[in-house]
Structures are given as structure tokens and as C-alpha cells.
Length: 528
Image (cartoon, rainbow, N blue to C red; front, top):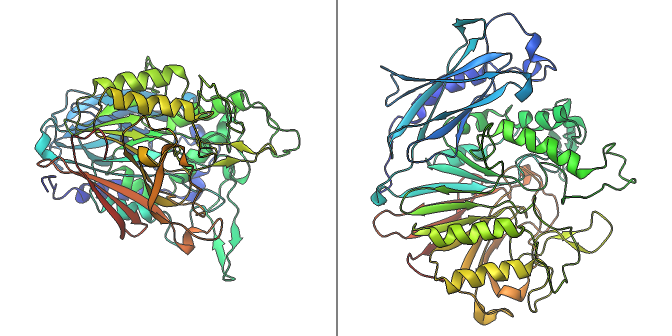
């Protein structure tokens, strides 16, 4: 394999871990960090990078008080003759978070960086620097690409358990030294309170680190912010963030289970005093943009959207979808005409355009929901559909019509190398879609790989819908619902693209990194 190792990469994280170790629960839970005036600014929530390109990347940090963000970069860990970047003033308007865009970086190189937080009134007074590292996207094909993906974090009340070692799955992903992490949605469970304890089937007790914001469903901006801040209490995640850039998308639990635009929460749901889902969504979207480095959502970004394409060199383009913001209302999914679908018309036309112009060997479609797995929605007391498939194996209906249109487009434009990656259903599986098995036949074969959860309840395998002819080649899932992370069934996926042959190897892995399933895909084909 031609993917380049970078010795010493983990050594650069020692400074980041030292700063992270200084984080104590009382400081993290403080309601008003702006009033902690003594000492110097601190970045106890670590650092992270995102949406890295051949010559740029976003660096994120959160301060415990007002501070000026400064980033220094270097080609080595010594930081001799560093390049300095002056970032934004961090204050309460962004919950003391901020991103700085680094540009003019060399392609395909390891970048070492450190973030300094300076007193706004005295720039000479800075806190302890927090360090991290990332690789810029290569321009040479032979360098190869490796990344990991998963989703569904801290759901169903299973939070940071110190007895279990927290979110240990991040250490297994880090050991693979990936170029980036594709976070496939449900990055938080804003609708899922974290209790202090929970009973396990074997009679033992699960213990959670808890916070005030995680004691109820999120409604206010402060509560949504607290949900994102909660996960950063985990040392494994902070260590991973300092090492691996993220490409992130959202799904429903950043707001509320199975939400859609225009939805009103039933009066019988007494957990919510704010019944307008659009109001909750605006607050959640703002917190989401504050706590992740996303190029199209940062202040001043023209697009102001989650969906985007991240070009990862000659071998790979990643098409990040938003299957939540533009969807129609959840329904039984039996409509014979459905122009809005799950993507909305504008996003669908964007996706077709970008797929057609892509010259990458592989086009990963990062979907926050699966295509052929039936995901029901009973939140409103009706037999509605939450994803695309509705369980009818016949001709496309409802949201399937939009997916059929996309698959037909890919076939007739002879677009090669499309692979679907997703999470959402809290088990791992591999589905192969084949026209000869399908009711709708005007498409070329393709693969859909599912992974997750990262750290949430695991659930039995979803039913398949035969409209696009899926065959479940592999699945691992519990037989019981909501199995805790202590019971296993936590998963992530790995994609490794060889620079010489162009072959894509997909591996589905367990929490400790054990490989469960491997599939090698050949480049240059319309269908696999």
C-alpha cells in the first residue's frame, strides 16, 4: 500500500493531552465562563480541524473566557520559525468558540499547529498552547487515501462512563492513522437526557458523567450548546480531534428525533415547552456551526448550508448530503409524485451537477440515512417513514422517486465509482444493490455500507426494501433493542484507497478495531 506513514504524529499530541488533562468538571460546567477573570485563557475542550483541502484547513478551539485566537503552524514538531495566523475574538456570541482558516499550505504534507488564546486587553498574556496535527490533501494519486466513518454518539442515555473508559472507540480509529473522519450525523442527542445511572441487564449499574444541559431535552441555545460541549469532556475524543480532521454532517438528533421542517410537537409531549421544531432547528444549527469546523457554515460563508463536496485529491471526492433540512414531512411514503423528496430539488440538482463534473476515481456519497433499509417513524402515532424506503418492494414511491432519479442519472451519465456510506440505524451492514433483483431497474449496481453507533444504544437489523434490489451481504446487530456500549455492538468503518491500483478496500470494524467484513472494489466501473 502506498499510503504514507508519518512517524511521530502521536508525539505531537502530548501538549494537547496535557492541556486536556487540566479540564475539571466544575470548570467545564460553569454557567458563565466570561466571569472567570483570574489567570489566563484556557482551551480545556481541546482543538480540532475540519474540511481540509490541498492547501487549507479550519482550526477550531473554545476558550473559557474572552480571548483572541492565534494559530501557529510548522512543518515540524519543534515549531522553529512558525507561521502565525490571527483568528477571531472569542466571546459569548459564539459561546467562546471560533475557527481560523489556514490557507496557502503545502499539499500532501503533515501540518503541525498550536493554538494560543490571548487576553484581548493584553496580547502578551496567553494561555498554555494546545497542539494538534493534520495532513493536507495530496495532489499525487500515489499517496493514497485512508479514512474512517461512523455516527450516533451518546444516544439513548448512554453517556461518558468513566468505569468503561469513556468513548474508547476513538482510540481504535486513531490507531489506523486516517486522513480524516467522516462523522455521519447524530453527533449529539439533544433530545436524549443523560441520567447519572442506568440499570444493565446483568444487574450492574452504568454510571454517567452528567451536566446540567444534559439533564433535559435541549430547547434553548444554551442547552444545545451544552450538548456539544458535553462530548468534549471525553479525553478519547479530544485526543482524536487533535490528530484527525473531521468532515461532519448532521441528522435528526442534533435537534429532535425524526424531525422535519415545519413540524409541530404534540401537546402531549410535556418534555418540550417550545413546540415549533423550526425554532429548535435554528438554535441547534447555530450550536452545530459553533462546535464543528465546517467551511460552509462558518461566519461569512456564502453558502450557509451543510451539504457540500470535499475534494480529497485525484482518488476521492466526498459528497456530504443533508437529508434533514430540505425534506418533506414524514408520511407513509406511498406518494406517486414527490418532487421535494428527502433532499429537496435544489440539493438534488447540485448533487447531480457535482457528480457529473467530478474527475475523482471514487465518489463517496455521504448520506446521513440509508437508502434501502426501512426506518419507521412512529413519533406522531402514525405508520410513517423516516428515511427513504417504506417497505413496499414494488416500483418507487414517495422519497424513493428522488433516489430513482439520481440512480438513473448516474447510469445514463456513466458516472463511475459511486459508493454510499451512512450510519443512523445503530448496527453495521453491507448492502449490494442490483437491477436484476429490483423492481426499478434503470440503474447500475452499487454498494451501501452502514456503520455505527459510535457510543449509543445498539439495535436489531433493519428490514430491507426490495425496490432497488438490495442484498444484505453482511450484518452484525444485536437481537435486543438498545444494547448499551458495555454490551458491545459499537462499530466504525474504514475506507482505504490504494494509490497504485486505485482499489477501494472497505472494512467494517468493531469498537476495538477488529475487522468484521472486508470488500475490495475495483476502480473505473459504473457499477460494481
